[in-house]
Image 1: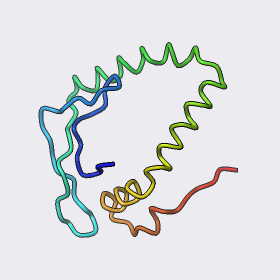
Image 2: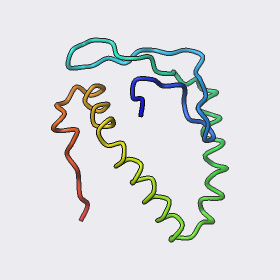
Image 3: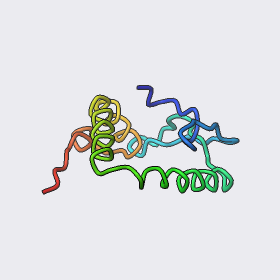
Image 4: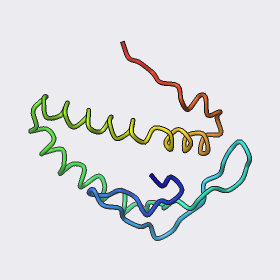
Length: 106
């Protein structure tokens, strides 16, 4: 997982490059990190349009299908846990130990 390269915003399940980018800042050091795409109003409008269209299909899925998809999504997050923890630390400036904290809902 490449956490230092952002090829675009996700719109309609595709990476769409932005017309402009800006760099994020590591708040703990003040140093610039990497370039990230800047979404335009048009990008946002398209994303909302496609999300509304996707909701039609999503709302027709059964509870079991949704649960299976969400569990697969959780598995992908878990498989990429370390780079995601490093990303949280760099972008938020908090200690890595706090990025590693897990929350359990009861």
